[in-house]
Length: 130
Image 1 (tube, rainbow, N blue to C red):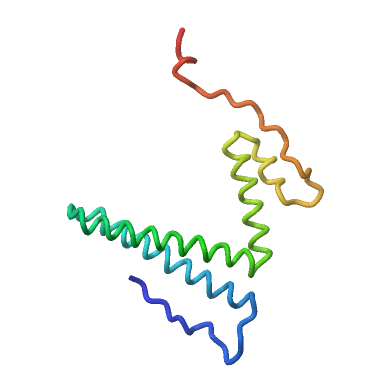
Image 2 (image 1 turned 30 degrees about the horizontal axis):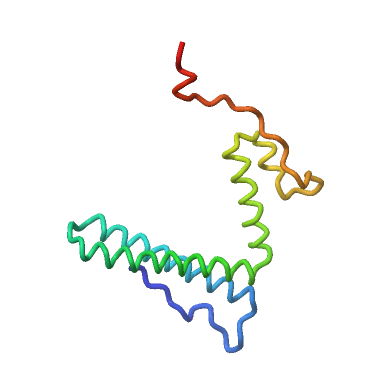
């Protein structure tokens, strides 16, 4: 597992919220590294007991990463704004909205409501009938 010096960003005073957010991002990185490590161990064994333990621990790491992400949203309002815009952009992207609509999210003068996505013809089993 990669080793990150937990004290590299410490200063001889209490950290500001911005400094703490930077440190919490390192915590998220460590949690994601652990999730990937445990997933690799699960893939590398047929031992069901070991897999069960690894899955349990991996799920805990997922929860930790999610909790840290929520904390960053509180500590770094700019990051929280980007996260909110990403949610809006994601919804537009998967609905088939044009690139321009996606990129307009969060821009000055952009409509608060997302424009209607263009109608995208999707192939289905039924549409393949003659």
